[in-house]
Length: 123
Image (cartoon, rainbow, N blue to C red; front, top):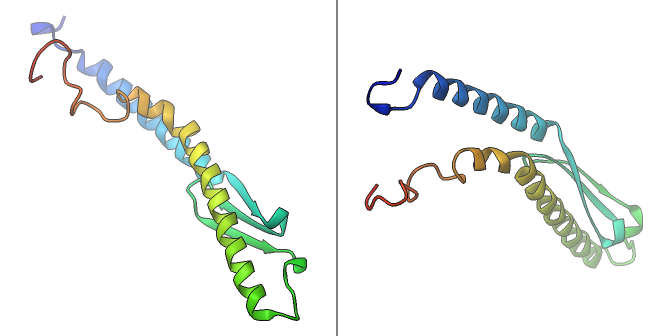
């Protein structure tokens, strides 16, 4: 029995431990995930992990015009940047998929501040 009608601390602690385990599992899945971004019709490919770190960049030789090295360098740089942005967008979706449910389990991702207790002003 809980004096004063308070929450069962043991159950709360167990729930916190379960959420921590789920968080660790989601982070592990993100570490192991591979996401690819492309640009230039596939001439440039960027591979990033689920946390957004670039792991590989592949540039198709057809992206390079030996007759105009300066223009080609700028074009390739632009395509690499576009491919990274494409990959980042995919990573954001993956992170939301893996971490979003955990944030909801924490009360909408923000915890108590601002939410308080409905119906009780100031709480």
